[in-house]
Structure formats: structure tokens, C-alpha cells
Image (cartoon, rainbow, N blue to C red; front, side):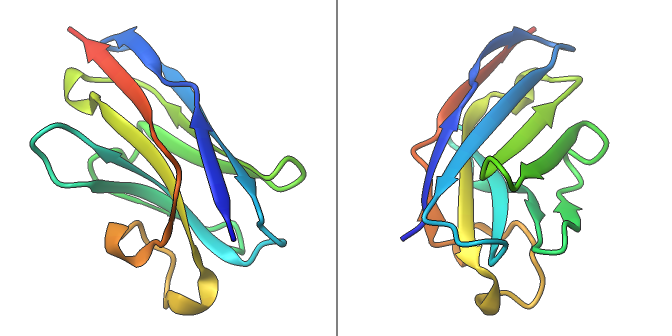
Length: 126
């Protein structure tokens, strides 16, 4: 059973940066697609990016060039570095995982992921 715990959320002004972490347990080696997602009030859950077992990454167009996903395998920790933040980035941010065997390609499609963290709130003020 994979368990994920996010941390690092908070409040920041527009244009600022924030880094989120996701501690992963029950994760035996590089066997899962792992991704970042967010859910804003009144909006659908949105996939931001995902990292494959070979380290390749796929990002949503909305965050490409501003957000960076990285994975520290030694620490079993996933990161999301967010730069040039905008008020519309305000949301609850989640990390999630799915067994790689169920994905043709690791992309951040929320419905494909079955292990989820509890989320961490990010608020960007103008």
C-alpha cells in the first residue's frame, strides 16, 4: 500500500515561489507513476505533471515553464517547485501515484491514479 503525505503549502504573493514535498512510503523502487495535482474551489481536479520510472516528465500546459517536478529516490520524496505564482494557482495541491503497469505513459490524468495524499493548501495573493 503506497502512502503519500504532502507538505510545504502556505501563502505567497503573486510572482513568488513555493516548494511542495510529498513523502512516499510503501513504494518499492521506481515502480509507479507519481504526479502532482490540484483542486481549486468550484473547479475540476487538475493534473499538473507526472514523472515516469525513467525520470521523464510530462507537464500540463498551464504550468509548463513555471512548475518543476523532481524525485529524490534516496529519500522517497517527490517535489514540486512552483515559480512565478499567480492568484489562479490558489488550490489544494495533492500528490498521487499509480502502479506503472496500469499506465501506457505517465501523464497526470487524475482518474488514473489510485493512491492519494491528503493535500496541502497553497494561496497566492495579488
